[in-house]
Amino acid sequence: MKSADQLMSDIQLSLQALFQKIQPEMLESMEKQGVTPAQLFVLASLKKHGSLKVSEIAERMEVKPSAVTLMADRLEQKNLIARTHNTKDRRVIDLSLTDEGDIKFEEVLAGRKAIMARYLSFLTEEEMLQAAHITAKLAQAAETDEKQNMKRGNG
Image 1 (spheres, rainbow, N blue to C red):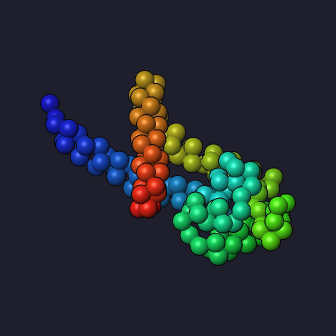
Image 2: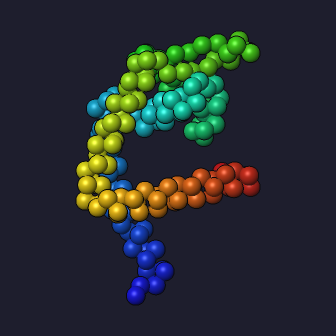
């Protein structure tokens, strides 16, 4: 029987091999849709939260607001987002998804889902349930770790 250290090494190598294969496919799929990973992050954030200030998106992305402003310019040119003045402070600009932005976001997700479906098709239904449970648990651990690092001033 393998030790915990050997199992962790096996998992790390398997995940690395999987990500090295999937990541370029995901990037190519997004490129075909005319969206960069950073732009997808913005679209996903707006989809989840409705509308956000440029500063809120910058904080989530850990970039300067000027970088988000440039990205917003490109997304607005494509009619994927809209800018509106904040109702509480007219100096503040809120970003939100347009109908076209919502459609584009769903198209990009569909492309990503198709890529994942190809790989997950090798699993049985039971293995998919296990994988869903394990990856959700790992994602939750990563989010918890990130929040703890931010509280300590390390994030």
